[in-house]
Image (tube, rainbow, N blue to C red; front, side, top):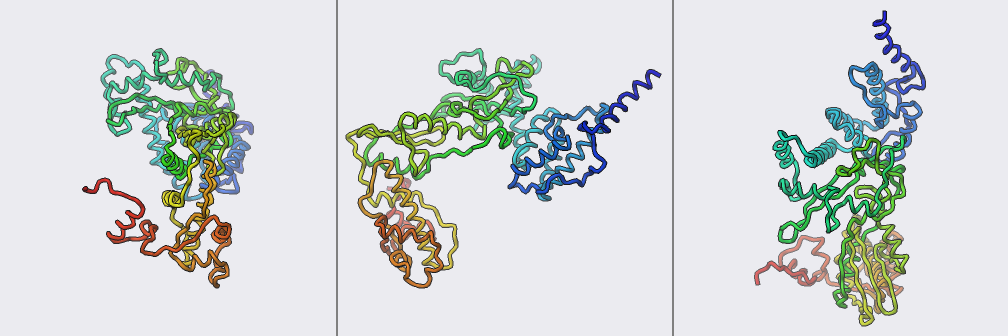
Length: 537
């Protein structure tokens, strides 16, 4: 009798779970595999809206735990395995009903691949499933290989058993590769791993754990029950000199930002970087006036950016307290890999510059200037690299000639993406695009205290386009021109530009747009000042 009672208990328990409406294993009689939970299917371009809708739908049905992993799969011998599998299959069918057929087909292949992984990849599987958008099978395989390489490093960092030491060395030697495609040697691996050992003092401050402790990158806390931590991993690299010899070993802790959820783990991600034309203008002016130039790279730049969202991360491998159960790091600073890292770093750096008197250029938000009397300092920021130039009282702002501006325009030239039925319209639109670039360059040059004394020549080999610029009522074909193109006429009348004629045979732009013969090609190269350094003397 006792045995029969014990065998009946699990069955009664599972029956209660299926019949209790508050249980996540409860399925209403109207629920079926064909149920559609959201009105708008996911197309790949509406993920944020779709994600919120599908999340609320699963919460309403008490099935969100099957998606985010908080209701794990029980063992096959468990009494709840059958009802878990039934509910999980129902949730998968609801998910497939909420996406387009094209995405569903790709998701089906991805799910087959992920389900084929063993349980040691359960965390990685969950991270891939919450990525936005879902990756392809090739991308998922790449993530699995990265995870395997990371595990190889972690295994090597722990003392193996004596009989396994030789095998561990062989496996890691074959699995780990440097940035040039060659495998790391055993000595190089040990050098890289020594960077994250907390008991090793390093006078060069290259220990990333020490750097992150100094900048208060995180606080050690217990993980709240309603939060999911994002993963992290070490990325190792060998920096080499120009001659190929090893300069230094580098280890960087990178957060797995691809698992972040928009609106929860991050909001703004955009960070301006210096336009290449701005870099060229700054270098050209500095070369003309022989200004001093300094280039610098901010070490661990992203660690200075303040993090405003509540983001949790497991303690990294090598941390002295990463074995304590339930202890995670609450990030205070933007770690490399976070989607908002570059945004937060630039916000912190630009705020610091503005606080001490720098002015941010409206032509390029990554350019800052500071004037003190007759001296000026210019700072151009590109992520964590920057160029600094100082203008002394003896260096007055240079006189920029029209030829300088023409060279800059060629360096920053872009091809038109619009097909026109009229050659005059195409040429006039090209003039309009160039005029807008000239206006922007005037604004940029004003940041350096430079004003052009004469109108900027704008050469065009199309007579009709030049006549339209001078007279908007030239002929009937002008009625097809868009209003924004008439900026050419406006700036011509304002004296900002000066449309001039140029013979088609002397048009330097042809080298970018036409197939030319050798003689014409070499002639235009010479006209642009391009030299072949490898040509025989």
